[in-house]
Image 1 (cartoon, rainbow, N blue to C red):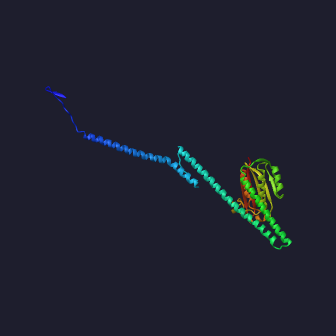
Image 2: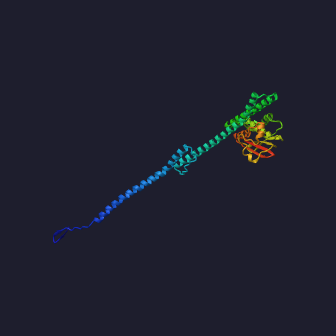
Image 3: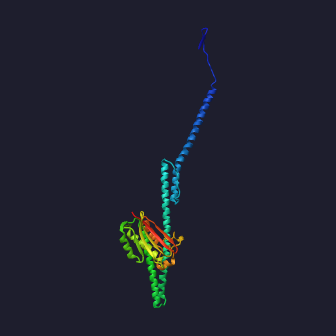
Length: 324
């Protein structure tokens, strides 16, 4: 308001605000679009994050289902320091342990199947002889000498079957005995018991005062080694047994001057029923179980069984057991 010559006037200022209103409307639309876009981006990011977080759990679920069906080699391989990473690491260790155990059980099962197959094959030979000669005694007209010969063949086959059964029982007992009872055994007493059981031609040298282990199993081990050495030394029955200490181990070294073993067979002779000379073994009653039993006895005592040999020069078997 203002006055001119005592007259009152009012002045009005006007301007076009359509442009401003349009800007406000545009800004409002932009904000709404930005909000919608932000929500979409947030939703997408949230979904991706949730998938990323849940991916290890989903993989754990899939692997667990696959392992339950027998696929034991699967791993998550998820490395992280959070709880899911710790869970994945524990799951991978569990899977690895299960795979190792299953592999070990499969190998053991295969070995037992082979062992049973070999046992069946070994039992078949003497049983066939027993049945054949017994049938001859019952059905054929034989003189006294022939009857005695058949009876002797039946007796020999029966003794072979008995020996085979005893060694199989010993092998099963050694394999399934688990923890053995170790005791301190006087070395001279141990040697005296050995001498009472083996041929006086076998030379025994003992350089230790005491032996810590299962005396029954250790005597059985040495007897098997000496038996194999004598069997391989038909022409030169020169067998020696040396008991000595080497570091933390006591070694039972059995050497002979027999036929020896070919290099390609050294890795096989520790398997049950494997025989270097099958003709000689069958003739003398060998079943190919002695070294397998000795190996198990050494392992039960924390040691190993090593064999060195040269064809025509002889063989040396070193059975080591830990002293403590």
